[in-house]
Length: 470
Ligand SMILES: Cc1cc2nc3c(=O)[nH]c(=O)nc-3n(C[C@H](O)[C@H](O)[C@H](O)COP(=O)(O)OP(=O)(O)OC[C@H]3O[C@@H](n4cnc5c(N)ncnc54)[C@H](O)[C@@H]3O)c2cc1C
Image 1 (cartoon, helix red, strand yellow):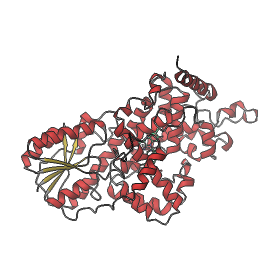
Image 2 (cartoon, protein in one colour):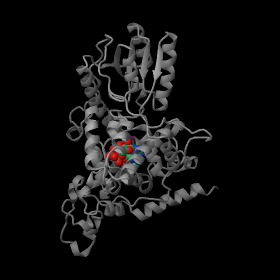
Image 3 (cartoon, protein in one colour):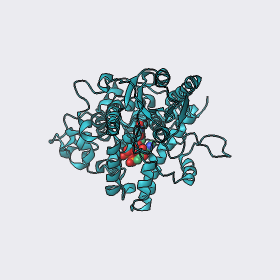
Image 4 (cartoon, helix red, strand yellow):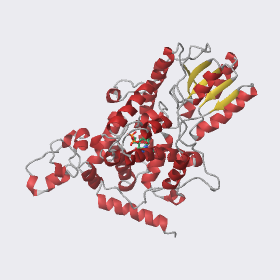
C-alpha cells in the first residue's frame, strides 16, 4: 500500500515506527508540515534548531534517492489534499504531544476516514506512553518517585527498530524551500554561537550519545550539578526534535560499563521527561494554570523593568546572570542554573512563572512544552510534585556550592573575570569591604537589583496569605 509518512517531532530514520511500518507496507512519501496555527508561543531558538534538523533529515532521504517534502498551512487540509491526489491508502505519523496536536489528530483522522484513507499513529517518543495510568489507579500520577517506580517496573523498553534499508518513493510535489520560512536568523545573526556549539540531526545525536557514554556517564551523578564541568549529555535538543529516541538512549546507557548508580541517575533524569509528558497529557491546561489550584490567586507580577534585567542577565547576581546570558548566546543553560534563575524570577522578583516560561520557550534550543512548563511549575511551587514554596534557591549560596571558583560565572560574565574567587558570587562586597576598596575589579557589573532576604520574606508572606483562608 502507498502511504504518506507525516514527520512531526520524530525527525529520524531509525527507531521510527511510523516510517518503519509505512516502508514495510510499500512506497512512501515523507512530508513535514509547518502549521503556524500550532505555534502557541514564539520559539525562535527551537526553530533555528528545527531548520537544521530538517536539513539533516532531508540529507538522509537524499541518500535513499528521495526528498523530504516541506509544506506549510493547516495540516489536516494539506494531508487530505495530498493523500487524495496521490491516491495513498494511509497516512502514518507519531501521535500529537500537546493538547493542540492531539485535537489536530482527531480532525486529521476524521477528514481522512471520510475519504477512505486510514490515519495510523504509533510512537517511540517516550519509554512509557504519556497517558499511561496502571490498572487499579484512579487518576494520573502526582509524585515523581511513585510515577518512576511504576514506569521502571514496565521497563526495559522494546529494542529500537532499525532504519529502513531501502525506501521506495511515492512521487510527490516539489514542496516549499526551508529558506523561505524565515527560521534562519536575519542580520544581526543571533545564532552564530549556537551554530558553533551545536549540530542538529540524527547522526549528530548518536555521536553525542556515544561521546557522553564514553566520557561522562561514569561520574554523572556526582558531576551533573556543577555547571563549569559540562558533564551532562546535552541530548535535550536532539530529544526535543526526536532525532534520537529515548529507548535508543536507554539501551546504549544500560549496556555501558559505567557504574550502576550513574546509569540509574541518568535514566531517572530521562524519567523526568516522561513525567512532564504525563503531566501535560493529563493536565492540558498546565501551560496556563497552576496545577495546585491554591496558587490561582498568587499575586505574581507579569513584567516590568526587573523582568528586562533578568532577561538580559543584569540582576547583579552572578550565577543568575551567567545562566541568562548563556541562554541568549547558546540556547541552553545547565539544569541547576535553570532552577536557580527560575527561582530568582518567581520568588525574589515575584514575577510569574508563565512569563519566565515564555522567555525560556523563545530562547531554548531544547524547548519542550511539557518539560518547560512542568519544570517552571516545579520551581514555582505550584506543580503537583513541586519544590515546596518556602524552598527559595539562594543564588549566592548555590553559586558558592556548585561553582566554587567561579569558572562558570566568569565564562559568561566577563566583568567578573578578575574578581577574587571569594567575591565572585558576591561582587558587591568588594567595594563595601574595607580590605579591597582600592581595587575595583567589577565596576561595570550591576549592583543587586533586590535584597535577597527581604524579597524572600515578601514571597513567603504572600504564600502564607494564600495558605490561610480568610
Ligand atoms: C525552569 C526549567 C525549564 C526547563 N525547560 C526545559 C525544556 O524546555 N526542555 C527540556 O528538555 N528540558 C527542560 N528543563 C529540564 C532540564 O534542565 C534539561 O532537560 C537539561 O538541562 C538538559 O540538559 P542535558 O540534556 O545535558 O541533560 P541530562 O542531565 O544529560 O539529562 C538527560 C535527559 O533527561 C531529560 N531531563 C533531564 N532533566 C530533566 C528535567 N528536570 N525535566 C525534564 N527532563 C529532564 C532531558 O531530556 C535530558 O536531555 C527545564 C528545567 C528547568 C528548571
